[in-house]
Image 1 (tube, each protein chain N blue to C red):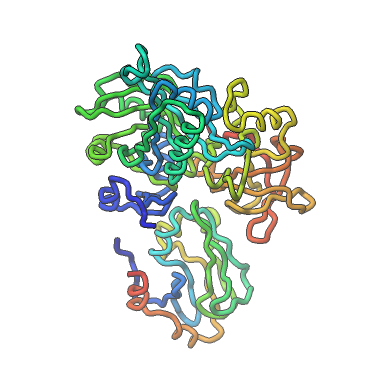
Image 2: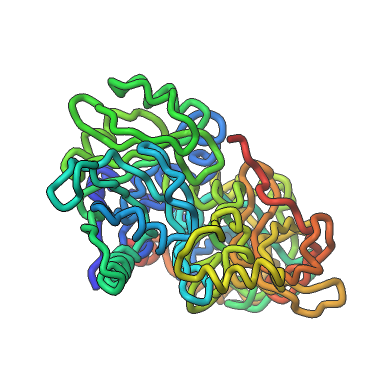
Length: 127
Length: 373
């Protein structure tokens, strides 16, 4: 089984991805993670304006078979959450790197991204 | 201890299944997705490899007495080709395991059995319990000085469940015999392309269908002939929760969750008019009534109830525990099974389930949540 691992973003060992654009970091979970979880039935996310710490709790994702914690790739304020997921959690399965994104963070310090894995490093981790 | 592997381990792997350890067996948990597999069984037909289930074969002049004294139901009601659900209980009436007992055709008479054939049974203990069950049967046979031969045939049979509204037609087309004419819990030997299988109208999904015992050596071939959605243990779990069926080791467990059949909602398997291990204790429970009982719960708030979560009353006092739970694929609602005091067991009662520290409003529901059989 092979999984998509786009090289335009960084990864956490806990299977979140982080895509930075103009100081805003968009966060989701990887193709591998959605496949491991199976059918996602809902996600619990923080509110806009909440402040998250790097590696701190970002929310919870529930699939039919399991519940899993999500972790923040960088510190920052929550700028937006993907409200589409509340009605259509299956977007996480269908398009984990696109429409299945979870939230956007206004990063406190973009250098924190350097601590994350590259696509190649993440690929080695899940191999 | 190394994991036991079903005869189709390789075929499932090639088909892209994910695997999980279950009862000491390495079993497919998911082939495509739980939703897809679950929907196939509710709307069409799906096939499960349940070769992790045990098979114990009992035959001899005293086979009926031995089965009667070690299972809670009335075995003497079984004619050849019948089956029944039963509990295996200890002296205290606590469920050790649940099982289905099939009455096979009598084996030919021998000098010791007189002129009659020997009554013969096959029963299906849960995954990983076949060895201790086999020992239990031998030990009681010896203690009671009964004449019966007891074989653990778990490694001789693969077991498939073909379930769903279109399962009868699919299997019937493959067999030389008209198995679609079997009644619920009826069973017979039937032939699929010269392979003799034991085929029973039983299942664990709340749907019509069959369970097939297939010689291990022919398992892969027979599996390939039954063309429909392959389903893993994940969908088996969501289907059985909707149907309100118990999972051994979870909804009851001799060590961690000791329950009588009455508490577990399977009092219908207890034939108090028969003599069996646990009977006297169960008569007492029957007369006194249960303190706690299994109920269905549905979450009203967002969340998914899962095994081990606390159930509280509306004041927040812990009154029970969730033993099984899932997001029901058919209902689109979070549902579960759990034990609560009899005072809280009335359907419609408002309770709470504690989901990761947060109390979520829940309602007691009638079991089964879904039953189409």
